[in-house]
Length: 183
Image 1: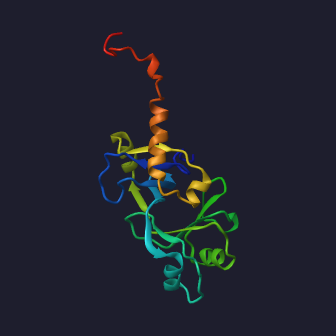
Image 2 (image 1 turned 45 degrees about the horizontal axis):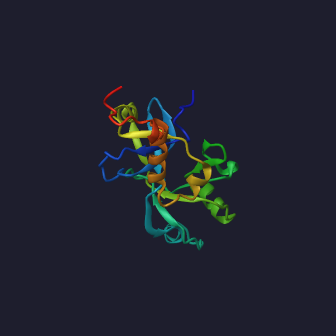
Image 3 (image 1 turned 90 degrees about the vertical axis):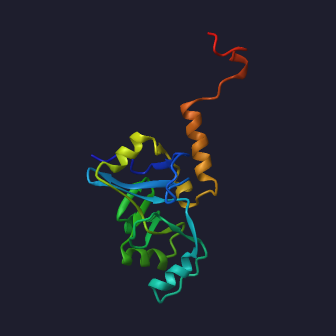
């Protein structure tokens, strides 16, 4: 059975102070009884995709988009994209993940756009993510495909605001009594 968390994002609680995840939005790409894996969507690095690509290939790739820090765990270069034929994981409808070198080279050679490149990933051991969710470190939210591929600068703030409205819808101030402690 597929986890209902795959294809959703974890939105860091404002109280989560771990510098790896403070104000992070993490796309869950795998989750099963052994643990979970995700990619931080809103951690652009100073390095461009083109600069990073020059370290793994002799064929130039003039892409000035930022490379993203997917998390604190080391791993291969990973790409989120729309090409099902080169997918290793379907994350959500029309969003796929590839880390296989040949698949990534094919995506670059065919100039598949849009793509988002990550170095590193976020990982949780068996039941670790479930404990963090129970402790309130993370809030789960749906996300649109375009937000995954072209992350707005204020994505965390937008999602926190959306989650607050879902949990506590706005109250019409005209309905609040002068002394709310009296009911």
